[in-house]
Length: 215
Image 1 (cartoon, helix red, strand yellow):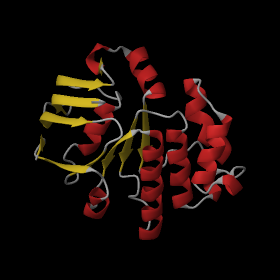
Image 2 (cartoon, rainbow, N blue to C red; image 1 turned 45 degrees about the horizontal axis):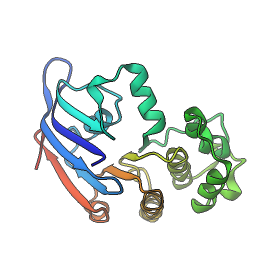
Image 3 (cartoon, rainbow, N blue to C red; image 1 turned 90 degrees about the horizontal axis):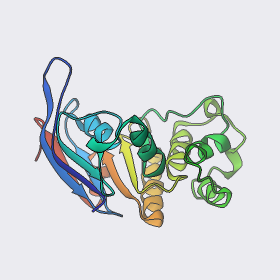
């Protein structure tokens, strides 16, 4: 088991609960869709799994490491070496080229592999775009760069928050196909937040978050 989320509790500032005893597990190489209405806590749960935020109760264990035991340095190290994230808004660095964006995460983690980076660029259809800057790319191209950047460090867990939410139907299908192919190729697990039942149906399992609980 790669990820165990065990009875997690989380409240917004002011005390309003958003997650109430949420539990789920994810095996290495497994893909899991997390669905639910807007504001139900899906992104909050993803941020907790990425060690970007702290929880109020329960425990999250990633690759055998309880997140509650980590200090800020340990959390940052976990995000560099074991977890990568893909967001709806792409979050590319505008001053860096496609090639530089692709290698950014891996260089931070100290595991940049030129051969793997070249393979990712080819696999994602970016080989002819390496010298371009994000502003010169379509939305689908930017999201492919974001996926390549996330996979460049060969994470054990890929967390994706509505990664196709800003894309048209064709670009959305292409991005999902590439993401699923890359996690299968690397053996990474995928936890993906989505509103789309069609996208959720493409993954191994689907869980629904409602009222702060997994249903």
